[in-house]
Length: 472
Image 1 (tube, one colour):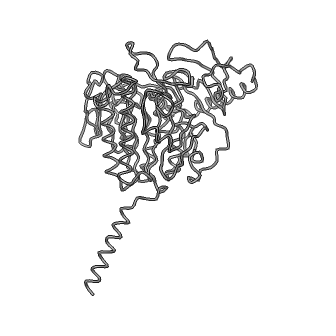
Image 2 (cartoon, rainbow, N blue to C red; image 1 turned 180 degrees about the horizontal axis):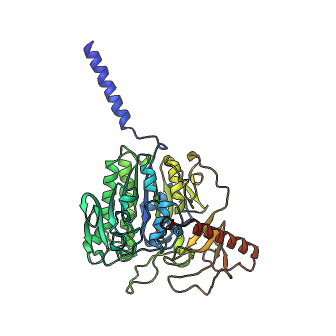
């Protein structure tokens, strides 16, 4: 009899162990991974038609997931775009004062902002960041504030650069409980990155390895991994394993290493039986750099759109990849309804059971209904409305439905293609039919111009009246 009881106890033990090893149901606090590239254009991928850049893992995500063909960032430059993704708010609300903040700037993201990491951490997620921060840096102007770096904004762990790696004094840092460089909680891995080729060529692989380790370490609990790669921002750096392989040259090598990074993460999810419990999002912070660097063809592609990074409002600076990949939950779909990185925070909070902030304005929408009916999102009854922000984070254009109104122009190429725009004489394009913004329709549509201008000015006035956390 005792042997029988022992046998039953062993069976129960094996059964309980088996149950504990089973992954959570797909919709029960799914893991979230966001890949956020730097200066990668709409046309830098083989799935979007580039004939000499090979991105098979990203291509597979686009085929098997929800591929948004009209996906936007809120601004065509670095810091402000990262702020918008992490907070779901237009850059004018940030108080940063500029779309890019350098290592010596006093500004940084305010501690009262609620980021995706903070919201998910509050409901039990482990949070890790593996890549470029560029939302503040401890320095004398801000009294070496620890609030300028990621641990103060919801991340449990981080390895990455404080700013873009092209700054002469850019640093590669990591979170470290025993560290105190440059401030408490961090330690320095490398400095002056542009002149440190070994460190610079290690970045993509280093982030990939750290992300994979983070996934394996936290596989038994929900996690959020934010992977903002430094590349393909100039200067281009690829590990020697990838250099000299692409027909496209160094840019193609860089994109191949990024694609390999995506592949390694997807492979890890599969091996750890986490693939059906994990939503993977792939996008970029803005369009590509277009001016040749030292006469080298290291520039990217915004085709079929005009201009690129650093423009005021041309589509090429704002249109980026937008792929949502979640095997078993999201069916393959080519989604033509517009969406933006502003939509990530409210959508993810709804999916993951986090509290959507009610004490501040959010500019993103819950787009669960565009992803899958299984996610039980509310239908989007209103047409897409979106503000394009320029260098001081002020509005330069508005899109409403398929129409776009420019009130200010600016071009990385110093070429506004023969156009001028102002609040008194805006430009109007139908951007679903006129992809390159060639045919100004303002004279044909005076009522539409007035309504769109009214809406833009109303949104701008609301943002200025509400102010920022730095000025309250």
